[in-house]
Image (cartoon, rainbow, N blue to C red; front, side, top):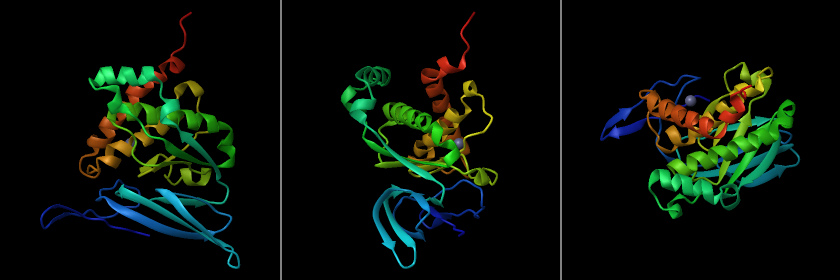
Length: 250
Ligand SMILES: [Zn+2]
């Protein structure tokens, strides 16, 4: 399905780009309520919260309904071999008082202003990546914590992380961000200490803020999202992962 979304920037003046298949986006905020009917053996992920599941026995199909307010796009995926794992980011448990105090000092804010929210994290992994699940969970937790303490709590109830199946990676679908859902792509031959997987996951998560929540124009001002997001990406890696990258001195 091709789409073209225009944004009214000034009264009567529309910002309207041609649609390209692999591109960035610019659109206005809205509420999406979407019903997806798929063969029942498909595993589905989508923007927002799944609010209804209805199986159609005779047709061997299932309808999943999703709802999300205050986003500027909707994305979904369906694949029979996905394995689905659900974890919760618990603000009270996953953020230590020391981490909150350090961020409050850095920002000159009271700790009460940095309270994060619980988030349901949904992981859709192809079978060959399931053994890496805990790495996905840890990196996503770290991202919710770091971006949340510095820029404000992630405001949505769900976050879906999709590791694209091998066939899809060749078509450029891994490493892409959409509201409350993003894709990553584990590599078969990536040395652990390059942390390329972690960098990509953190990066795609960061786009929930830049440009997800800010909704800047990715077509015309790419630096606003890629620049600020990559800067924060590196700050997080330096603070939380550099001990894994640097070989100990002899
Ligand atoms: Zn990016």
